[in-house]
Image (cartoon, rainbow, N blue to C red; front, side, top):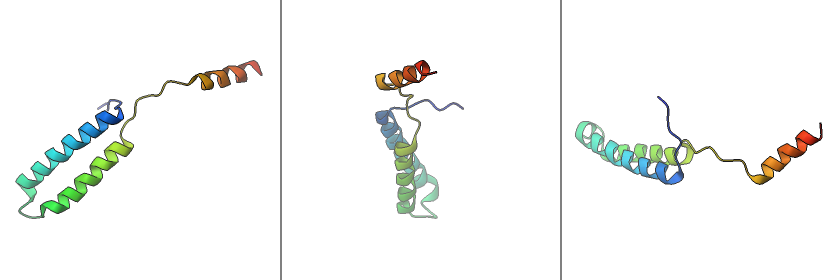
Length: 76
């Protein structure tokens, strides 16, 4: 499975949607055994990790980077 590159706004949107979905699943299937606050803590940490470490878009090189590469090429 290929994970698409996501902008910050996309990562936040997916994190919120997954947080809601997983909490509803927890309420339906696991809440009888483990309280909801445990799931909320787990899913909040997972959402924060998705926002912080999720796949970022590939950044285009800056003009300064291109100039540095050209300067290195001329020095050879």
